[in-house]
Image (cartoon, rainbow, N blue to C red; front, side, top):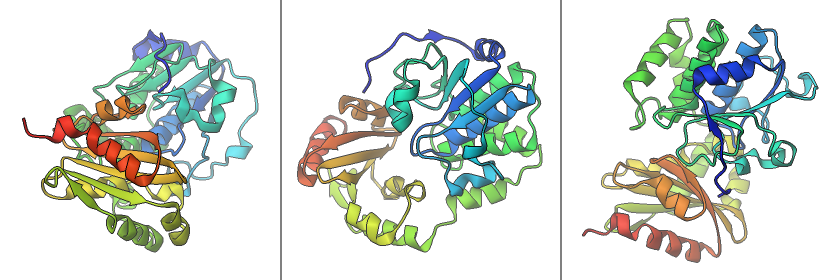
Length: 327
């Protein structure tokens, strides 16, 4: 985890004022992009262009085809080239999540809009709403403060961010505000059914095969309250599933009755594992992963650990002992 910085806190009005003061703006999304970072980025991009500002959006891992309905006709290479007056990071809790973009933008980010409690306050100004289900909730407020009307394309982006970060409005981070904003976006005429079907009910044959292989590795701990699954490099290579199509696999074991925390280990290198943790209200995933050098949300967080598979498993089982052992 990056050392905690000293951002100046701002609200939506303050963020809008910062944006108004710049004419050339770059928007940054995080690596392994999801619906919230992309929805936030493209909704803001639309608002900036509506204001006549010169803007572009960048993502270290590119823009996945899975989300292309949010940016039809968009080509990252055809965006304007310019030296930015303002760099805005959306849904990025830590500069580590900038991936290959980190050397270019670290120390230059003037505004971060986020909702992760683990935000490291690396930006000059920070709009952090940890009570928001998704960063798009804050992006919507900023767009309102900028005086830009929400058009159909922005509404698709905002709705997608809400839906994906709440598991189609099923997770405990969903609030009345989330539902109200989703309803506002639906009033613009977006096809919410199609968005939800694409995000939650459509899987490729390859994805289903990878999911099957991961579930075959499932093992229980603490009287079935904790489950661990493993996604090896071999399974990924043999199924051919792209990174952007793996989203959601880590959460599947949490559906098992009695499970309070599901941990998936994705092999990145021979002795390097990406940990994805999904939990019930009885386990704070963010706190557990923070102790291991990572972070995230209370119910969904992650970190990276080094060692053999058995060493990493043992470390995670021990780390969660306090939360999962009856008093």
